[in-house]
Structures are given as C-alpha cells and as structure tokens.
Image (cartoon, rainbow, N blue to C red):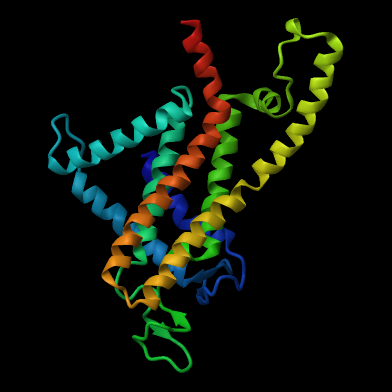
Amino acid sequence: MRFFSLFFVFLLTPSLLLAEGAAKAPSLETTPLKLPVTNAILTSWIVAIIFLVCFRLLVGKAKVIPNRAQAVVETIVVSLRDLFEPIVGKKAMPWTFPVLITLFFFILIQNWTGLLPGVGTVGWGEGTSFFSTHVETPLVRPPTSDFNGTIALALFSFGAWLILVLKYAGPKALIHEWFGNKSDRKELPAALYWSFSIIFLCVGVIEVVSVLIRPVTLSVRLFGNVFGGESLLHATSYAVPFYFLELLVGFVQALVFTLLSAVYVGLICNHGDEGEEHAH
C-alpha cells in the first residue's frame, strides 16, 4: 500500500513544484488551483496511471503460492531489497524501502517513456508538420527530460531523507554527524582534542552545504542524461543502436538516483545497526 500511495504522490508533486516558463514545457491547460499542467506532467500522469493499473491486473491478489506474474514481481522486489538493505540498514529499511522502490520504478518508467514512438516528436509549432521530429511544442514529453520534473523528484528525495533521518536517527545524531568531534577524548590531550573540535565544526559547515546542494546534483545528473539521450534519438531518427543504448541509460540513471538516495539515508541511519552488530 505504501508503494501505491507514494506513486500517487509522485503524480501530484511535479505540478506543485513546477517553475513557470522553464524547460520548454508549455502549459496545455490551467487547473482550478491555477497550477500549470505541462506536456511532461500530463505524460507522467498517464504513464504512471497505466503502470499502476497494469501492475494490479498483473499481480492481482497476492497468494501464498505465487503465480508466474507475482513470482516475477516478487523476484524484482526481493532483489532490490537485498541491494538496498546493507546500505540503509535494517532499522530504517521498513519505511525507507517503499520510498526507494517507488523512486526506482517511477524514474525508470518515465525515462523509458521517451523511447515510445511519438513522445517528444508529435506536436505543433511554426514551420513544422504535425509528425515532424523537430516540433516546437510536443504534445507529450518525457517527464525526466524536463528540468522541473527532475527537481521535483530530487526535492521529494531530499524531503524523504530528512524525515527518515529524524525518525530513525534523531536531531542529536544528525548534528553530531555534521559537527561532532569524532576523535577519542581519552586518547588525546585536551588542547589537541578541542583543536579537533574546531576543525570538525568547520568541516560540518561544508557538510551542510553539500547536503543542501544534493537536490541540485541529483536533478541535474538525471536531467542531463535523459535530455541528452532524447536529443540524440531525435537527431538520429531513433537509430536502433542508440535506441537500445538509451534503454540501458534509462535503467542506470534510475538505479543511480535511487542508490544515492539510499546512501544519503544510510550515512546517518546505518550507524545504529553497525553498533548493534558489534555489540552482538
């Protein structure tokens, strides 16, 4: 249930975070709340809803003895869980995994949306035909090739990170991770220990800056790769080698985005698990 709830959150997030007039995503209509609905957002809604419906129809009601479709889905989910659990830690995994798996599938599907015929190439504009490969206003467009969409995903990831860290580690652990003196006070002279405290304080300031720019790095990395791939496909008229290359790139970028989100959580929340393992 968490997976489906988060998926619907992703349907709404881009509309709430859309920057007006950016990334060549012209508004197709205006909602009652005066929020612009762009071609990229419209594509994300359609694709995500189709995925959710197909997923439910494919798996149906979960059974103790799974059918073939359920077995395939369970294999994928278990493989991702085994990949993320050592990074995140067992303590934070129950709430973090639904976020990570939703991020992965949402980004993967939206990345592959750009490979569908007509996406980004069907539209209108001055001096172009309706089915031209270079249209001024595409009717539908890959959401992750729109900078607004990747910013929305990065901010969602950042917000989830903050909530999970405060829930499983707490503000004290977060502040200590950034500014705390990591040296052993018993093994160092007092003067040297307090000197290290000043150094760790300065390092903490740099660490806070690096944390604050994570949404920027996450969004730019995803946008650059997907937008570049979309442009390459349009320029080469969907040449077969580049088409299959973009299949791989779409998968890798979804995995990288999700792995980085997992690492950010694990850097803070996984310390407790390590302490418990050493205690045993």
